[in-house]
Structure formats: C-alpha cells, structure tokens
Image 1 (tube, rainbow, N blue to C red):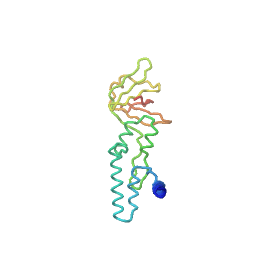
Image 2: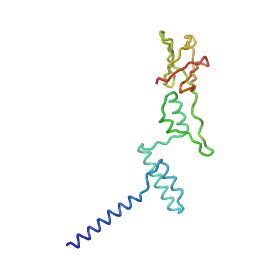
Image 3: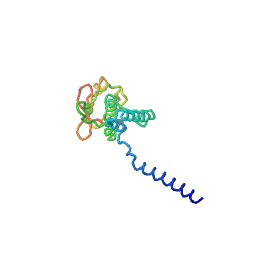
Image 4: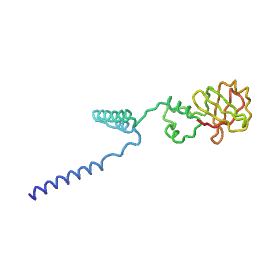
Length: 184
C-alpha cells in the first residue's frame, strides 16, 4: 500500500512539475493584438505557418467580436480628430499616434477645421460670443475682441485653428479672428 501511495505521489509531483515547466515556457502576452498574427510570418514550415495564422486570426476575431479589440482605419481616425478638435485629450492622441511606416505614412494631425455654424449668441453684458456648430461642438469666446452682432447673425462658417500654447483662434466667415475655447 505504501508503494502504491509513493507511485501516486511521484505521478502527481511529475504532473505538477510538468505544468510548472510548461507555464515557465509560456511566451508573454503580445504587446499589440496583431503581434501574434505577425509572429506567424516567421514560421518556415508551411503547415505550421498556416496553423499559426488560423489560430492567431481566430483569436483576433474573437477579441474583436467581444469588444476587447477595435479596428480603426485612417478615415475614422481623422473623423475622431475633427470631432474632438479643441479638447485636450492626451490619451486620445497616444492611441492614434501618427507614425511614419514606409511609404504609407498617415496624414498630418488636424491643425484646422472648417465647420458650419448652427447658431451664435452674444452675451449682452460681457459682449462675448457663444458659437454652436452643426456638428454639436460649442465654443466660447475668451478674449475681449468686440464681435459685431450684425456679422454674427450672417455668419455661416467657422474656421478654427490651433494657436500658440494650446489656444485656438476662430474666424467667422473669414473675418477677424477671436480667441476661443471648446465648451462641448
């Protein structure tokens, strides 16, 4: 009976040791969701490479289906940059960092947008304008430039551009620039 227990103990020990050795050899999780797919290209055996691609693509598809991974193309990135123009979102720029990658470099980051105006109101006390754009953005004037009410009523397009030290300038129908900040 003790011999049987010793054999079971050795079997369990070998299994545990085998699992720890297998765990120690497990490669670290990929830094990017596509790393596993790219790693398959290094396989020299055709069958092994195909099996690797099949497994990596299946894992990527599952991650995308469950929402763990989201793929975004350059057009979507540019739309996000335009929609978020004026907000200070350091983490957003890190996600959509534009890098030179061979011949297919992405376009330069958005530095200026031209958007249709939905409405403009001028505060009677402060004389500062509040500009609502058709895409939902709301900008408020932060400088003391006098905005002519007659020009404001006729304005159709706002051109907003980045200025010094993280500020923004807005021209209403190409007129005089006013310093603004995004509210919404």
